[in-house]
Amino acid sequence: MAEPEVEVRRSKRRKQTVSAYRDGDKIVVLLPARMSRAEEKRWVADMLSRLQRSETRRRSPARESDEALAERCRELSARYLDGRAEPRAIRWVPPMRTRWASCTPSDATIRVSRRLRDVPGWVLDYVLVHELAHLLVPGHGAEFWKWVKRYPKAERAIGYLEGLSAAAQLGRTLDGDTD
Ligand SMILES: [Zn+2]
Image 1 (tube, helix red, strand yellow):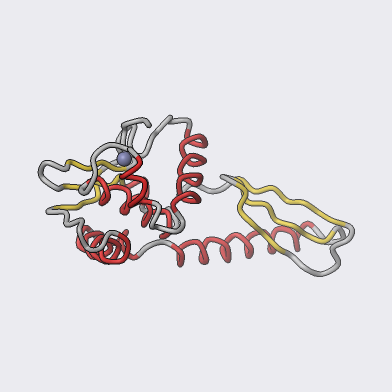
Image 2: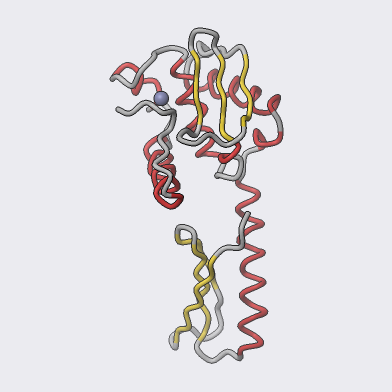
């Protein structure tokens, strides 16, 4: 991953505490106003590595391999789709120009862009549930969304992916078809 942009904000009200959070592509570090440049440097480096460690922990184990991805699909199908979605093959593929993932219902195969390897696990889970649901219902009609919305974080994940697309200015949609 590229070095993130860092914005340091100093606050007079802040006496001791240092905190940091991600705001889109940027990382905001909040520091007390009375802190030396040397201390600032040390704290910023420290907060960045802490934040990255916690974000790495939240990534999905499914990112490790095609087998791990298939295993995650079995779990998600069992949990949200009554075990009815059974892909014949699922694999990570090199980044696609306009899609995060795709599904070919005729031969029950699913491909997931490697660009999604570093998103939080709950976002990747949404993408997998979405593609698995296409094995039950093609297109994006009401019947399709009824299945997908069984995944509780669907709305949040859709928002996350929209933000990611906008940030990358790629106009990428989930799997190419608009609705
Ligand atoms: Zn779709």
